[in-house]
Image (tube, rainbow, N blue to C red):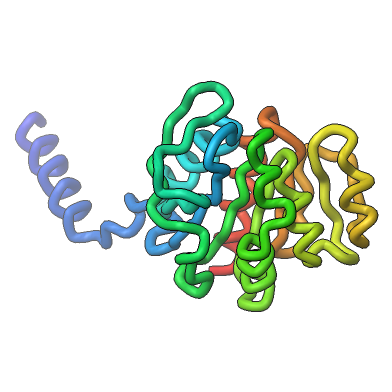
Length: 200
């Protein structure tokens, strides 16, 4: 009986080793994600939570900012950006994510940030923004006629640029995903992952 058990176990191990290993890999293997953070006072959990979720699915995440100096979050997290905003090549990424936090205001009227957002839409990339960062997308002109959400009482800023403001934690309008703050970070990440998988 024991001999039969060990023969069966050995056979199962051999069979498993012959199966493609893809099943054990993350479902976003090969996907490149860019997260754009403020040079200071980005919101820590809006960066950390989506990054961990995306990497757990196999995606590779790079970080861009207005400086290559160490960026500091509003709660103390530190991040060394991989590239400058003006070095971003949108075609190299599957998704572009604008992280929120009080410091994200630096991109509200930033021409390079607006160009990146418009290019992401033109190239059918997934684009996300959380907290106050959807204002950047609105001022880039890509939320006109799109359903979107934003932090607190900033909905008027979106509506002024033609967005259809929706008071929900996370709103997805095709490839554009917006979220209203740090408590929505995980749902924001899950929605981005779901859209990326759908686009595969």
